[in-house]
Length: 248
Ligand SMILES: Nc1nc2c(ncn2[C@@H]2O[C@H](COP(=O)(O)OP(=O)(O)OP(=O)(O)O)[C@@H](O)[C@H]2O)c(=O)[nH]1
Ligand SMILES: [Mg+2]
Image (tube, rainbow, N blue to C red; front, side):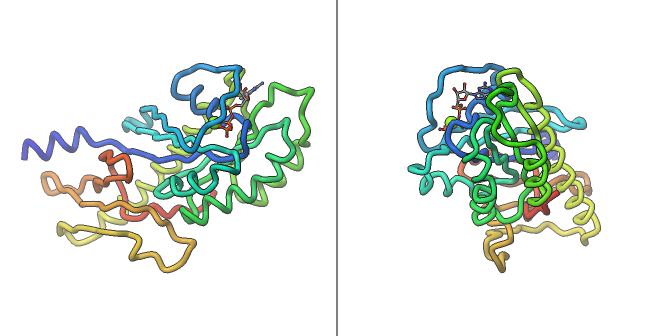
Protein backbone atom coordinates (compact mmCIF):
# COMPACT_ATOMS: atom_id res chain seq x y z
CA UNK A 1 0.00 0.00 0.00
CA UNK A 2 2.81 2.41 0.95
CA UNK A 3 4.33 1.76 -2.45
CA UNK A 4 1.06 2.53 -4.17
CA UNK A 5 0.75 5.85 -2.38
CA UNK A 6 4.31 6.77 -3.18
CA UNK A 7 3.71 6.04 -6.81
CA UNK A 8 0.56 8.11 -6.80
CA UNK A 9 2.54 11.12 -5.57
CA UNK A 10 5.28 10.47 -8.08
CA UNK A 11 2.99 10.32 -11.07
CA UNK A 12 2.91 13.18 -13.47
CA UNK A 13 1.28 14.02 -16.73
CA UNK A 14 3.67 13.74 -19.65
CA UNK A 15 2.70 15.33 -22.92
CA UNK A 16 4.50 14.74 -26.16
CA UNK A 17 4.33 17.77 -28.44
CA UNK A 18 5.76 17.87 -31.97
CA UNK A 19 6.80 21.16 -33.50
CA UNK A 20 6.63 21.21 -37.28
CA UNK A 21 6.95 23.73 -40.11
CA UNK A 22 9.32 24.80 -42.88
CA UNK A 23 13.03 25.32 -42.33
CA UNK A 24 14.21 28.48 -40.55
CA UNK A 25 10.78 29.55 -39.30
CA UNK A 26 12.01 29.39 -35.70
CA UNK A 27 10.96 25.98 -34.36
CA UNK A 28 14.20 25.29 -32.51
CA UNK A 29 14.27 28.87 -31.30
CA UNK A 30 10.72 28.54 -29.95
CA UNK A 31 11.61 25.41 -28.01
CA UNK A 32 14.88 26.83 -26.77
CA UNK A 33 13.16 29.99 -25.58
CA UNK A 34 10.52 27.98 -23.74
CA UNK A 35 12.85 25.44 -22.18
CA UNK A 36 15.98 27.51 -21.58
CA UNK A 37 14.77 31.08 -21.75
CA UNK A 38 17.30 32.09 -24.38
CA UNK A 39 17.36 33.31 -27.99
CA UNK A 40 20.21 32.70 -30.45
CA UNK A 41 20.59 34.90 -33.49
CA UNK A 42 22.57 32.39 -35.53
CA UNK A 43 20.75 29.86 -37.65
CA UNK A 44 21.80 26.25 -37.28
CA UNK A 45 19.40 23.94 -39.08
CA UNK A 46 18.15 20.95 -37.15
CA UNK A 47 19.40 17.65 -38.50
CA UNK A 48 16.58 15.12 -38.22
CA UNK A 49 15.02 15.47 -34.80
CA UNK A 50 15.93 17.07 -31.51
CA UNK A 51 14.30 16.96 -28.12
CA UNK A 52 13.91 19.18 -25.05
CA UNK A 53 11.58 19.17 -22.11
CA UNK A 54 10.17 21.46 -19.49
CA UNK A 55 8.16 20.72 -16.40
CA UNK A 56 5.40 23.10 -15.39
CA UNK A 57 2.74 23.18 -12.72
CA UNK A 58 -0.76 23.60 -14.05
CA UNK A 59 -3.82 23.64 -11.76
CA UNK A 60 -1.77 21.94 -9.06
CA UNK A 61 -0.60 19.19 -11.41
CA UNK A 62 2.96 18.48 -12.44
CA UNK A 63 3.03 18.47 -16.22
CA UNK A 64 6.07 17.43 -18.20
CA UNK A 65 6.11 18.81 -21.73
CA UNK A 66 8.31 16.76 -24.01
CA UNK A 67 8.99 18.91 -27.05
CA UNK A 68 10.11 17.21 -30.24
CA UNK A 69 11.89 19.60 -32.53
CA UNK A 70 11.74 18.38 -36.11
CA UNK A 71 13.81 19.51 -39.07
CA UNK A 72 11.88 21.66 -41.52
CA UNK A 73 14.08 20.99 -44.51
CA UNK A 74 12.51 18.57 -46.94
CA UNK A 75 15.59 16.36 -47.06
CA UNK A 76 14.72 15.15 -43.54
CA UNK A 77 11.03 14.45 -44.19
CA UNK A 78 11.34 10.68 -44.13
CA UNK A 79 13.13 10.71 -40.78
CA UNK A 80 11.00 13.25 -38.99
CA UNK A 81 7.59 11.80 -39.77
CA UNK A 82 8.34 8.70 -37.76
CA UNK A 83 8.80 10.86 -34.68
CA UNK A 84 5.30 12.29 -34.88
CA UNK A 85 3.91 9.03 -33.66
CA UNK A 86 2.49 9.08 -30.16
CA UNK A 87 2.27 12.87 -30.09
CA UNK A 88 -0.55 14.28 -27.98
CA UNK A 89 -0.37 17.76 -29.50
CA UNK A 90 1.33 19.67 -32.30
CA UNK A 91 2.56 23.16 -33.09
CA UNK A 92 2.46 24.05 -36.78
CA UNK A 93 4.81 26.97 -37.30
CA UNK A 94 5.45 29.49 -40.06
CA UNK A 95 7.36 32.73 -40.30
CA UNK A 96 5.74 36.11 -40.86
CA UNK A 97 8.61 36.87 -43.26
CA UNK A 98 8.40 33.72 -45.38
CA UNK A 99 5.46 33.26 -47.73
CA UNK A 100 6.35 29.66 -48.58
CA UNK A 101 6.27 28.69 -44.94
CA UNK A 102 2.73 30.10 -44.66
CA UNK A 103 1.60 28.28 -47.81
CA UNK A 104 2.95 25.03 -46.37
CA UNK A 105 0.85 25.14 -43.17
CA UNK A 106 -1.95 22.98 -44.54
CA UNK A 107 0.42 20.28 -45.71
CA UNK A 108 2.27 20.19 -42.37
CA UNK A 109 -1.02 19.78 -40.56
CA UNK A 110 -1.94 16.96 -42.91
CA UNK A 111 1.37 15.20 -42.30
CA UNK A 112 0.79 15.28 -38.55
CA UNK A 113 -2.75 13.98 -38.96
CA UNK A 114 -1.56 11.12 -41.12
CA UNK A 115 0.64 9.93 -38.27
CA UNK A 116 -1.29 11.01 -35.19
CA UNK A 117 -4.92 11.43 -36.14
CA UNK A 118 -6.75 14.50 -34.87
CA UNK A 119 -4.73 15.81 -31.97
CA UNK A 120 -4.89 19.35 -30.56
CA UNK A 121 -2.91 21.69 -32.79
CA UNK A 122 -2.07 25.34 -32.84
CA UNK A 123 -0.75 27.48 -35.64
CA UNK A 124 2.15 29.73 -34.71
CA UNK A 125 3.05 32.77 -36.76
CA UNK A 126 6.58 33.53 -35.60
CA UNK A 127 8.96 36.50 -36.10
CA UNK A 128 6.27 39.14 -35.67
CA UNK A 129 9.02 41.50 -34.49
CA UNK A 130 10.18 41.77 -38.11
CA UNK A 131 7.27 44.03 -39.04
CA UNK A 132 9.03 45.61 -42.03
CA UNK A 133 9.69 42.24 -43.62
CA UNK A 134 6.20 40.80 -43.09
CA UNK A 135 4.80 39.16 -46.22
CA UNK A 136 1.51 37.73 -44.96
CA UNK A 137 -1.61 39.74 -44.20
CA UNK A 138 -3.19 39.35 -40.78
CA UNK A 139 -6.62 38.58 -42.25
CA UNK A 140 -5.37 35.75 -44.46
CA UNK A 141 -3.63 34.15 -41.50
CA UNK A 142 -6.79 34.38 -39.45
CA UNK A 143 -8.84 32.93 -42.30
CA UNK A 144 -6.42 30.03 -42.64
CA UNK A 145 -6.53 29.29 -38.89
CA UNK A 146 -10.33 29.39 -38.90
CA UNK A 147 -10.43 27.17 -41.94
CA UNK A 148 -8.15 24.60 -40.29
CA UNK A 149 -9.99 24.85 -36.94
CA UNK A 150 -6.81 25.73 -35.11
CA UNK A 151 -6.05 28.42 -32.60
CA UNK A 152 -3.56 31.00 -33.86
CA UNK A 153 -0.69 32.43 -31.82
CA UNK A 154 1.49 35.28 -33.06
CA UNK A 155 4.90 35.01 -31.50
CA UNK A 156 8.28 36.60 -31.45
CA UNK A 157 10.81 34.26 -29.99
CA UNK A 158 13.33 37.07 -30.13
CA UNK A 159 11.18 39.41 -28.03
CA UNK A 160 9.72 36.56 -25.98
CA UNK A 161 6.16 37.31 -27.03
CA UNK A 162 3.42 34.69 -26.55
CA UNK A 163 5.80 31.74 -26.40
CA UNK A 164 4.65 30.42 -23.01
CA UNK A 165 1.02 30.81 -24.04
CA UNK A 166 1.41 28.34 -26.90
CA UNK A 167 2.54 25.49 -24.70
CA UNK A 168 0.32 26.33 -21.76
CA UNK A 169 -2.69 26.26 -24.02
CA UNK A 170 -1.80 22.81 -25.36
CA UNK A 171 -1.10 21.49 -21.87
CA UNK A 172 -4.40 22.89 -20.67
CA UNK A 173 -6.20 21.29 -23.57
CA UNK A 174 -4.65 17.94 -22.83
CA UNK A 175 -5.46 18.10 -19.11
CA UNK A 176 -9.07 18.84 -19.95
CA UNK A 177 -9.04 15.78 -22.15
CA UNK A 178 -7.59 13.69 -19.31
CA UNK A 179 -10.21 14.94 -16.88
CA UNK A 180 -12.94 13.96 -19.31
CA UNK A 181 -11.38 10.51 -19.56
CA UNK A 182 -11.21 10.27 -15.77
CA UNK A 183 -14.83 11.22 -15.35
CA UNK A 184 -15.77 8.57 -17.88
CA UNK A 185 -13.63 5.91 -16.20
CA UNK A 186 -14.90 6.63 -12.70
CA UNK A 187 -18.27 5.43 -13.92
CA UNK A 188 -16.80 2.05 -14.86
CA UNK A 189 -17.29 -1.01 -12.60
CA UNK A 190 -14.36 -1.39 -10.15
CA UNK A 191 -11.98 -3.85 -11.67
CA UNK A 192 -8.33 -3.72 -12.50
CA UNK A 193 -7.72 -3.75 -16.24
CA UNK A 194 -4.89 -3.76 -18.64
CA UNK A 195 -5.34 -1.89 -21.88
CA UNK A 196 -2.81 -2.82 -24.45
CA UNK A 197 -1.79 -1.89 -27.93
CA UNK A 198 -4.17 0.83 -28.88
CA UNK A 199 -3.24 0.43 -32.48
CA UNK A 200 -5.50 -2.60 -32.59
CA UNK A 201 -8.41 -0.36 -31.68
CA UNK A 202 -7.88 1.96 -34.57
CA UNK A 203 -10.31 1.52 -37.37
CA UNK A 204 -9.32 4.35 -39.62
CA UNK A 205 -6.60 6.89 -40.21
CA UNK A 206 -8.42 9.60 -38.34
CA UNK A 207 -7.87 7.79 -35.06
CA UNK A 208 -4.86 8.28 -32.87
CA UNK A 209 -1.96 5.97 -33.57
CA UNK A 210 -0.27 6.48 -30.25
CA UNK A 211 1.60 3.39 -29.26
CA UNK A 212 1.66 2.95 -25.55
CA UNK A 213 0.27 0.56 -23.03
CA UNK A 214 -1.58 1.64 -19.96
CA UNK A 215 -2.36 0.05 -16.67
CA UNK A 216 -5.12 1.27 -14.39
CA UNK A 217 -4.00 1.73 -10.81
CA UNK A 218 -6.16 1.94 -7.73
CA UNK A 219 -5.28 3.27 -4.32
CA UNK A 220 -7.52 2.98 -1.26
CA UNK A 221 -10.38 1.92 -3.49
CA UNK A 222 -10.18 5.05 -5.59
CA UNK A 223 -9.08 5.17 -9.19
CA UNK A 224 -5.99 7.18 -9.79
CA UNK A 225 -5.05 7.92 -13.33
CA UNK A 226 -3.81 5.29 -15.67
CA UNK A 227 -0.09 5.09 -15.96
CA UNK A 228 1.40 4.87 -19.39
CA UNK A 229 4.71 4.44 -21.02
CA UNK A 230 5.18 6.74 -23.96
CA UNK A 231 7.48 5.45 -26.66
CA UNK A 232 10.32 5.95 -27.21
CA UNK A 233 11.25 7.92 -24.11
CA UNK A 234 9.88 5.30 -21.69
CA UNK A 235 8.81 8.00 -19.28
CA UNK A 236 6.05 7.16 -16.85
CA UNK A 237 3.13 9.46 -17.00
CA UNK A 238 -0.43 9.65 -16.00
CA UNK A 239 -2.92 8.97 -18.58
CA UNK A 240 -5.29 7.75 -20.91
CA UNK A 241 -6.35 4.84 -22.87
CA UNK A 242 -6.61 6.72 -26.11
CA UNK A 243 -5.21 10.10 -26.86
CA UNK A 244 -7.48 10.83 -29.79
CA UNK A 245 -8.51 14.44 -29.27
CA UNK A 246 -10.78 16.61 -31.27
CA UNK A 247 -9.57 19.78 -32.76
CA UNK A 248 -10.54 23.08 -31.21
N1 LIG B 1 13.87 38.25 -35.68
C1 LIG B 1 13.56 37.03 -35.30
N2 LIG B 1 14.35 35.99 -35.64
C2 LIG B 1 13.99 34.75 -35.23
C3 LIG B 1 12.84 34.51 -34.45
N3 LIG B 1 12.76 33.18 -34.20
C4 LIG B 1 13.81 32.64 -34.79
N4 LIG B 1 14.56 33.56 -35.42
C5 LIG B 1 15.79 33.32 -36.20
O1 LIG B 1 15.44 32.54 -37.34
C6 LIG B 1 16.49 31.65 -37.69
C7 LIG B 1 15.99 30.22 -37.79
O2 LIG B 1 15.58 29.78 -36.51
P1 LIG B 1 15.53 28.23 -36.11
O3 LIG B 1 14.86 28.18 -34.78
O4 LIG B 1 16.85 27.61 -36.23
O5 LIG B 1 14.59 27.66 -37.26
P2 LIG B 1 14.02 26.16 -37.44
O6 LIG B 1 12.59 26.30 -37.78
O7 LIG B 1 14.35 25.36 -36.25
O8 LIG B 1 14.83 25.67 -38.71
P3 LIG B 1 15.14 24.12 -39.14
O9 LIG B 1 15.82 23.48 -38.00
O10 LIG B 1 16.01 24.24 -40.35
O11 LIG B 1 13.85 23.48 -39.48
C8 LIG B 1 17.58 31.85 -36.63
O12 LIG B 1 18.56 32.71 -37.14
C9 LIG B 1 16.83 32.51 -35.47
O13 LIG B 1 17.67 33.36 -34.71
C10 LIG B 1 12.02 35.64 -34.09
O14 LIG B 1 10.98 35.56 -33.42
N5 LIG B 1 12.42 36.86 -34.55
MG1 LIG C 1 15.51 23.68 -36.04
